[in-house]
Amino acid sequence: MTDYEVIIAGAGTGGATTAITLAQKGHSVLLIDRKERDKIGDKTCGDAIGGHHIKELKDMIGLPDLPKDVIEYEVAGLDLYAPDREHKISMVGPTTRGVSFNRLAMGQWFVELAEKAGAEVLASTRVKKLQFEDGKVSGVTIQTDTSDEKHLTSKIVIDATGATGMLRRQLPESSPVEKVVAKEDQMVAWRDVYETPEYEFDTPDMLEIYWNQEATLGGYTWVFPQGPHRVNVGLGVMTIPGYTHPKKIFENFVVPNWDFMKTDLKVIDSSGGIAPIRRPIDTMVDDNFMLVGDAACQVNPIHGGGIGSSMLGGVHAGEVAHEALETGDTSIDGLWAYNPRYMESYGIKQASLDVFRWFLLNVTNEEIDFAFEKGIVKGIDLLSVSMTGKMNIGKGEKFKRLLSGIGKIPLLLRVQKIANLMEEIKEVYSEYPDSPKGLDKWKARLEPIYKEAKNI
Image (tube, rainbow, N blue to C red; front, top):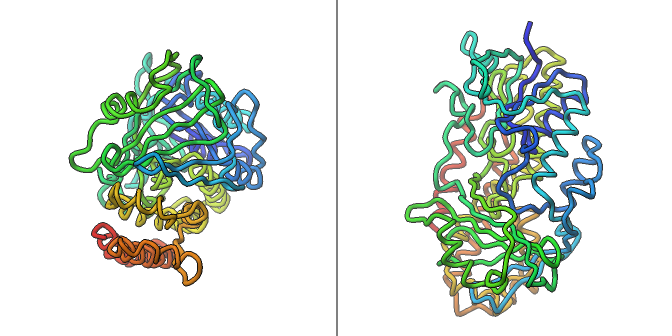
């Protein structure tokens, strides 16, 4: 007899969505978070989400409309600025509409939904380690600030502890689950939220992203208005050798170069964080064990956003866990369906964008300015890449645009090469193995593609 059918470590959007999905189906679920109950959801974030993510969850599990007290402002689209800040690409359309939101209020709302569905929430509690029986996960050890350690048993343990993947890293060496995420596959960020009483944003419904390889290598600066007199501003950089702490970049690059930063500001929040920016963990399950959210690397590799994809992962994880509990098979075989379902719905795109990430890392400011100035890149191109993970290089109007950049032949050749690699990786992911037996052979197909991408 176990204490719970499912224990979920981490009450972020991924963990909470998993809890909602399982509790709605009548399972006993314990959702644990180390933060105080009224602080769950308080984390470093760009505080924006596309409306299509919310619609997707509404269709899948009946997610209600976002409450008005969660929404800060309606978002119409995004402006991407070249390093020279004179040229920009505007991306406006159905897939860019969404909202900027209050991250704490969003987190609180998701936990409340989990509780209403029937999940038990245990806050101010640390999940310290996995418990094993006969070499398989059997539960967790927890501890609060005021109590001794306590062992809890469950049929399934779900690691939703964020980028640290604290439980994932405790799996035995024999586990097929990747335990460590490479530094080069992580992004560190710093962001502040301000009220700007002396500064008014002209287009508060447009998010702004600034690309600059010298200041924010492998990342970008964001300026996300949350109304005429409020803004979320921050930056993220890849943790590759020689990277600078994002707070220092913020002070030396952002503060002097944006007009609103020179006005009287009221600081609402100031904090840093870390996120994985790569393809999903190659297998997100083991015996009696699953991964969700940042712990599973369910994050867009280009911009580091993970709320929508972690919610999607949470639904898939919850549905597969339900099926496994119903059949009484929570082994790696019984939970395996979670992998191909997520890969098909989002992981294929993630893997393709992960390849694209390495191309972006090696592009210079001069090349970016050139592409923006000559119109070689259009908003529709970037929307297509971001939504599908596919870069189309045809013989029509786009081909003529590429020819207009004839002075940058090496860049254009690299664009063609990376487009081909993106298609190769998508083909590999479309053939994700239907059982654990095929995992090693499948993973061997990934290495040469990523190796080539890093050298383009």
